[in-house]
Image 1 (cartoon, rainbow, N blue to C red):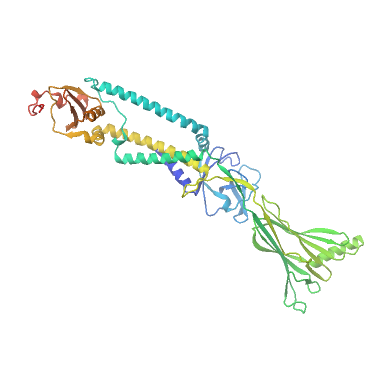
Image 2: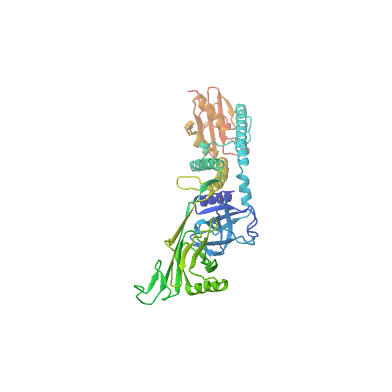
Length: 511
């Protein structure tokens, strides 16, 4: 039980730290390594690599997905796959979407946690525990009344005194402090669990808007002539084909990582048109890096002229439409069009066409894990539920351990317990004989003498000899006596001997 409590406390501390997350597995995608109902603890890392088993947040999913990284990179996104799946995941999480790498596997523990954290089980426990506690209190009160009645009878029980529950004040101060701390921690765990189990684990949230932009340009290297001021032509300057037909298209994409491909459409006034693939598809990080695509203007012109010869209608001007397309998982494709004109003399943008296209995608309404604000920490509701259960279990085990230790302390030295709890009632005296003119009653439990002393305002006389502690309460007619520390079979105590047989003790008179 001590190991269970220590493990529960360690797990709770790890979860509260925010760098660890508990995942209860479901499904069969990671068999035979993980089975449904296992508990896996994942730790947040600064970086991950292919082969790591990680828990990540999939767009639109309520729970974490626990799969293995089989490829990709932290910028463009990781490629994920369950060991028992035939296909890869449709999501490509980045490092920010990964909750952590699997470091601890507890088979079957998740099923028990789900059972313990079921609201119906907790509600049943909340009703049952007070009922059992009340029944125990009533039984204790009835037992106390019976003990008080029996304690007043003469020599009712000459055997060993019965064990009695120890009051908190009778325990050693360190043990009292431990119990108080356990009580505070358990109360905090119950409060946390009471909140976490009665609020939804998720909350609706809108993803932030996605801004995407694509800038298209071109450049060409030309010899030094009177047509240009330098040796490099850049958009939107026209490229005079008498000087060069070699042009480099330049595209710079900024936005979420995805897949980029570039097509070009050619069309002429005679109705002919075609589409050519220039590049891709290829992964793009969306960081604004420039992609360069070399093209041959003469080749486009020759293609249009060949089509015109085939249909018997002159080609005229060739309309060039550059069509880049960026596809991002979970979002609409970003596919702007950039028009250009190609004649026998030059290549240039069509009219006042913009060189940069922008797009804003509104965020989708999804669900995110609800968090609990604990001032310095913000665990999710699922984490708070698990922490609450672990804290209460650890507190119960610790309280049971303290109770067992308290029982040992009481059984080992009852005189020490009496002094710790009722020292204000004790008067230390030398060994003495009981007055012969008063009736002597042997009491089996000291609390009976303590109650009588408090009721009548009397002091309890106490002495110790040869490891035997004797307590006397003397009133006008009766001497109440309690002894501890000697085996009853060891023979009579000093106070059992009459005064005549003990000349060293003077009789105790009324004065």
